Image (cartoon, rainbow, N blue to C red; front, side, top):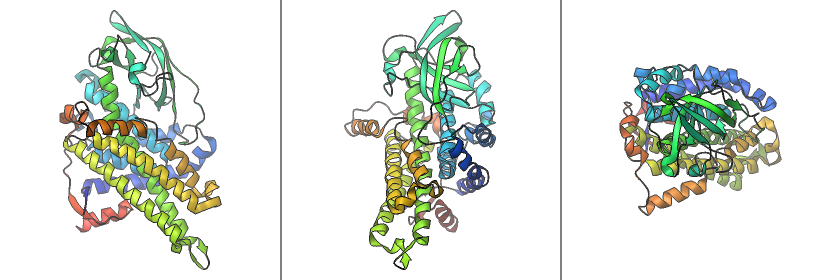
Length: 419
């Protein structure tokens, strides 16, 4: 027996986002793939739906719907366009730093426009030389009276070129307590964007470099206290980054499965659909198993997050499994499609390229394995899902239903309603 944590509100949300993705996003995918340019108009249209504010409390104009709802939104968008799924996940990642470390004034100032879709937040932590080693960053923030002066450069910033508010972590002193986080408006003097470099996949989404050149920000833009920067970075990555990226992978994975099953049903060989060939059927069976496992891992983890229960390892595992399994299934699909998979008309090559983009952000698979090993050995630190549980608990009560394992979420919805 499998347990699924969806109620009527989640069913309705999934249907709403899926319809929007099919009607408004799907027609623009080909143009994004052809031009490989940011689709700022589509990004703004998606933000206008209010989905960036899915975890923002209703008192600030958000949906207050929690992390399972957030997962549904990202998955359904990524099922049609990995780029737009990535755009939404990156902006929602930028929400985390304000929700968890923002002052009352910062929340009142920034959360309402974010929830309304008028402000896209980012989080800017990674640097070219230090990569995923946050403590190795060299960007600096120097106190100057009632301001801080920021200097340095951040790379791989999701939504760098369409974001309005960057969450920048910079060094204010030595060691782990020497990092501090700031809210930096995109139009503030001293903020410069480097030209976007062409990437392999996720066409329509941008993750680029932000340069800070003697950028003065008021002390009131500091998130939390001096020295909280590492906590801002790690908590955001753990509680939002990992499940968000897992949801993008899951959406791509679902698309791979649907496209492959449809192809195998229509493509005939020796007078029968190729799905009747045992070797092909075995590959589809493996894809189905991976998809079911990945889905359960992610929705179980985000359900725990909504309930305010300890789940940092579950979130790490969800990212690990979803990123790895989506790539594995996309490669298997390419093998089934063979030479036809190389044609852009089948989308399989796009799914593989997009899936590979999710491997590194918020920690590569090796990083997730190391953190899971620490947890198994009892050597891990306090979990962020515990430390911030009062801010993470959702009001959305789950409904528990038996689920026989259909790969299509719409089948699960039907089963839930029947139950």
